[in-house]
Length: 298
Image (tube, rainbow, N blue to C red; front, side, top):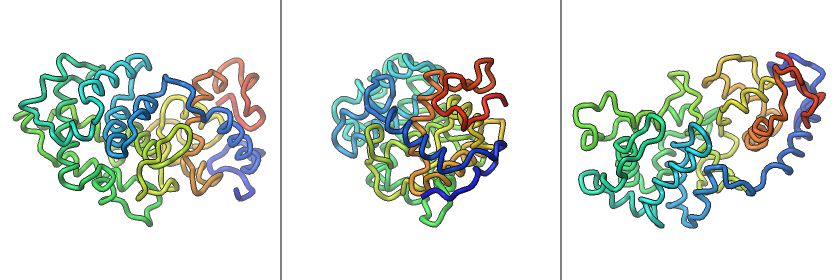
């Protein structure tokens, strides 16, 4: 049960947690349905094996930046190369032999060589730990406040793996490092947090493949919609996007649902995508389903 009171960082003390939690739960029931094929996770869902889902999910989440149509096209192209068993493809992958299969692939600033390097790194993770979950879990402490330290350790260890077979002497400028951001640099680690949400949570949207990391430790994947709605609801005191804002919004959501703070992420994102949130716009909260709980003019 939410603790009565106001959200930390909120500028509108009339907004009480139980009421907001009730309304967000209503949105969760309305929005959290696997109806849209425009969300990248739905390209991962057709894989039924856990090892295939965690591999395909990492690639899909890693490419989830840019216009939706471009994102989906790029993910489909990569998964088509990997075939019906992505995990088997990765375990057998050899950069020298198989790199040409990705052809002239390009997604924004990520090229074919960067995807080849990512698949090569995933193979090394599987060889070292057996699964991507086990590789990630080596840096996760059950008593940690959230997955921040584990993400830092995960990316550090990933960056220490060999990419010379792909980049040669260009290792320091390797584009593959974009897939492994770190909270210590201020990054919100949006795509890694999105991947963790897919892997850890289990509902109509998220896949629930992993068992070691609890949902209570997840951090919200910070995108433009979550930023706008989060600021409108007073979930964060920060104005600049980054790790501090992501952790702050998550801390506020954790007060509403300690066991599953990221439960509301998909709903908040959909609220923003549907243009229902009028934060800092002339229309204000006129069409917002959370009207009366928000602060539409920052």
